[in-house]
Structure formats: structure tokens, C-alpha cells
Length: 444
Image 1 (tube, rainbow, N blue to C red):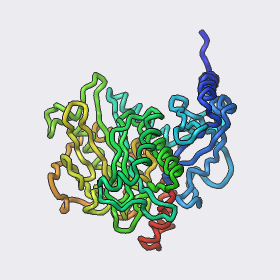
Image 2: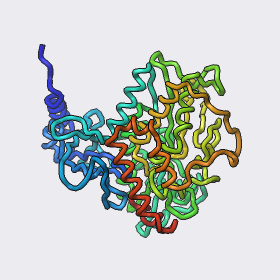
Image 3: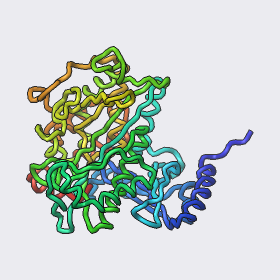
Image 4: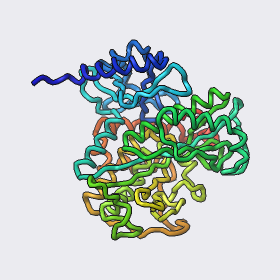
């Protein structure tokens, strides 16, 4: 019996994909990955090079593991200096023609060493490992990441100041929002909602839940698409945690729902509070227990803590509650079976989505394995509940002490994230809130 080498199999699939893309007028393919500072980095190849790129990958320096938000660099135990190379290998299952960038297609990339072994610092592969760990326990997860952004004119001012959630700003940008919707749906994404949000110039889009890694891929694709549509309309888009000092910022709320392999929804019809099954209670308890450390991944910027304040629906308190938008963990039962999920509200759009979803799954699995009890819920204003870290250094301290995350991420990835967080905390230590916002406004 003969077996096909993974490289040869990827090359064969890429040949077929290239033929289809050529027929659709595609000239080049963009490969995207997200670094530890939460910035999406890209490389691209002409369509004629897709087969070679799928087989052998495209070079990308490992020093990107320790890039900061301002493109300065630091070093970690395992990543230092300009030497070495990695290979970006596109995931052909997510190869997508870009509706707002005619002639281009996009795919997320995994990172490998030159010898073809997985790079231990690959965030996407980390997320995949946690999904596999969930599967070994007979469980699956559906996830979705809300995408919020500010639309600005070329001067940098919010492009509309109509009322929050108001028809005023929806009408002002009707053509723009139509093109966002068209581009996303043309790319095969199932859009659930598209609407104005709270802050001036702010909008939000939600798409259907899917597997955790796929949800992180989709969050990257949605942002790529929104940015491209904005540019075609002469607008700028910002996904930064805070755009205007004192205003509500851009969240990156993570929604999760657990199921057994037999399809049983573990957040619906159970004997626990609000229909939770024991597995779901233990999982959510694990997430709550680890939330201070998780913030170093889900709220990774100095600007994140200017967003994560009370009375901004940001989830600044370490508690949970049914439909409680001030709690870090909001339980949503939905109106029908299959709609129940938990929303992590304290995460924002500066997060690497693969790190965020992978770490939450790891924390939930730890709670499940240990049988952690879910604490009492907070049904109203959680003002007396425990505050989550209020600064990036506080979150870094919790992260550094987390044995769970150190083991889940592995030594290489854990160290690189820690190095980047420490360096960014130092970078912004002496800056005012306004200076932090100015420095990060257009980076995400």
C-alpha cells in the first residue's frame, strides 16, 4: 500500500485550486497569520506559485513572534535576532476569493520549520491542539467572534455621529454597509447581524458559529474584508480597543457553545442553572477561574485596559450572569435549542483570535477535568464583584503565574507571548491615556 506525502497532497490540491481561481480571474493569493501583538501579517504569491507555496511554504522570519504593536522587536528565550526562517503553508480548505479586492484570494497560514515540522510558536496550531483535546473527551465546540470597528473619514474623525444603534448612521452609510454585507456573503460567510453600535462611527458584524479554529480564521477574514471595503469607499477602519478617549471601545467578544459527540447541547435542557449540564458548568467555572491570566491573551494591549472599565458593557468584573452585559461571562440561553452559548465580553479586537480561543478552551477543559463548581451568578449590577486586572502589567503577572497556560501553550509560545507583553507594557508605561490611544488607533 502506498501513501501520499502531505507535501505532495497539498501540491495536488493547490493545482486544482489554482485552475479554479484562474477561471475566476484571480491573479494572486494572500497568506495571513496573526502575531503575538495581535497584528495580522501577510505575504502573497502570484497564482502560478500557489502549488509551490502549498508544497513547500513561503518564507517568513521567526522574529515576527516577538514583534510589538509599533513594529519594534524584543526577544524571548527561544526567539532572538534576525537569524532563521519558517515556512508559511496555506490552509487550502479556507482559500477564498476576496470580493472587495478583485484579482486576489486569501488563505490563513500555518507555520512550519524548514524541515517541515510544526513551528512550536504557531498560534493557529495551538488552537487546533486544544480542539483536539476537547475531541478526546467526546466534546465539540462551536464558536463565533463578534467584530466591531470604527469607520472614519480620511482625516481620522468618526465618519458618522448619529445616535447609538440609530437609523441615522445606518442611512448615512447604507451603500457602504451593503457592500460589506455583499462582500462577506459572496465569500461564503453566513452573516447573522450587521448594525450600528454604541460609539460614534462604530459598527458590528456577527457571523454564524463554526469550529473554534474556523471561527478565528473567519474573524481574520471579516476584518480583512471590512478594511478593503472601507478603502474602496474612501474610508478608514479601526479595530483598536479604544478609538476615542472615554468612549466605548471595540470588543472582540468570543461566543462558545459545547456539545457532546452525540449532539447534546450542554447549555440547554440540563439540570443546572438556566438549563446548564454539569459539563458546561465545570467548563465555564474553569474559564472564570483563569480569566485574569486569560486577559493577557484576550485583552493584550495597554489600550485594552482603557476599554475594560465599568459601565461600558466591557465585562470588567470577574463574574457571570444570565444576559448580564457588565459581567465578564454572559450566559445567553436563546429562544430555541441550539442557540444557547456563553459570551466572553472582556476580550477585545487587539487579541490574536487563535490565542484567545485556544486559551479559553484550555481553561475550560481544566475546569471540566477538575470538576470545578460554577460560583453563584450575579444577576444585576456587578459593582461589588471582583474586578479583573485593570492594567496590562496586572494581567501579565497573572499570565506569568499560570501553570495551566504555560503547559497549554508550550514553552516556546508561552515565552514569546510573555516577552511581547512585557515589552509593550514597558513601551507604554510612561504614556498618557491619550498617547496610548493615539499610538494604537490605526495599528489593529
